[in-house]
Length: 236
Image 1 (cartoon, rainbow, N blue to C red):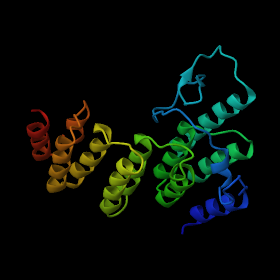
Image 2: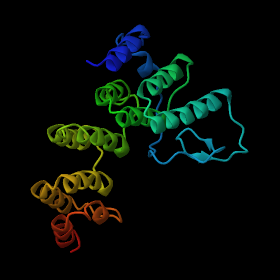
Image 3: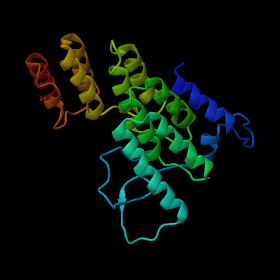
Image 4: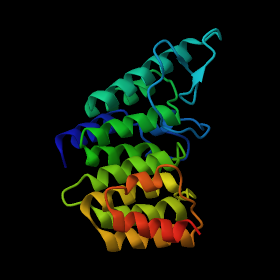
């Protein structure tokens, strides 16, 4: 276990609280509330106010102190992702719980993304376990896409873990992969010139009626053979 993972585990264990009927819930788990689905996108423009889903909201709308704190922490989490500051991101997420404020899906996903960007996949998986796997916040496709990016960044790419995650995201969480996820996978196949794997993925897209989007063929443009096969199978 890496030092970062150990540090996160120590923090979470030190802040455990009892909840009725569940003495093992972590501090973060006890503080997270139900949230509406959102997607992890680009950082908001300077001065934008973030609503509970991390989206730009009306800057004239009054904010409660809790909403202001969540907005400020979310901005810091976005900056952590930009700086690849995994440990700082985890500190911020844990700090929200310490303040008695419920993080939302955007904040939690950005924390996980910061870990992936920093190359701390073990830490990202720990965040997923504490926040998403315990069903205190329902993950969306972006959460799984970030984990997939982390697995593919390993040397060698952790394709068995990717395949297991693809199966879990649908069967366990009811999140079906769209072109967004397949674009990541196909892009990696193109980078590594894995024609057979790419063809299998394209066949799966066709079998599951996943339509390509504007980025699908762009993701494989460096490999003519993959691009040609994708057009043959998906553009029918």
